[in-house]
Image 1: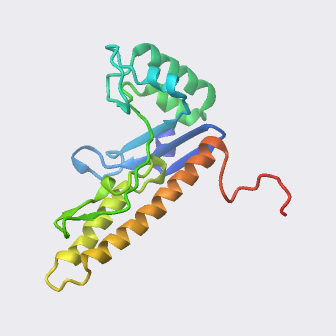
Image 2: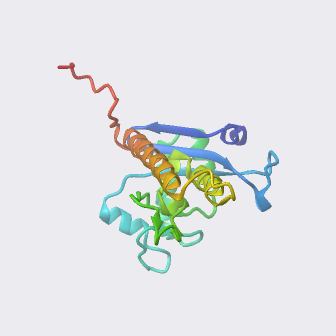
Length: 203
């Protein structure tokens, strides 16, 4: 069954300029019971500025910069995207995409800070404010959880970690996760990766 295929584990399927991801998320009210969980299913599409503006113009004719929420996609664009999916995606993904009634669109962006502690430790950046990792990295929740876990060490009575050590640790991790996301994205979207064999003879 398609549901068994998609709910089994994290799935990342890619080939040149076409990439999809699928992974489990908690169901309603945070349920982790099998068959009550939901799945995030994403399809990456390369667009130039004009194509992106067209896709991000909602059903009321209002242009958005980064995203369109559920129910806002122009019906014509929605039908065009479904036709593209049917033509290029693996059958398991295509079948599910055709059945999604209310999809949403999100432009993939990158952000990575070089500093997360301000005002002598009174203001801290955490979670996506530190690094907005790409969806296929599948690390956004893990990043936020790690920040909270390590902050406990900063604020607990024994003080086993200083705020400076906390900042160093989270920025190193964020930089690594960001680089992985960019490299994986370049591989999936453009066939480009720093460790890829491009067929050239080494010099």
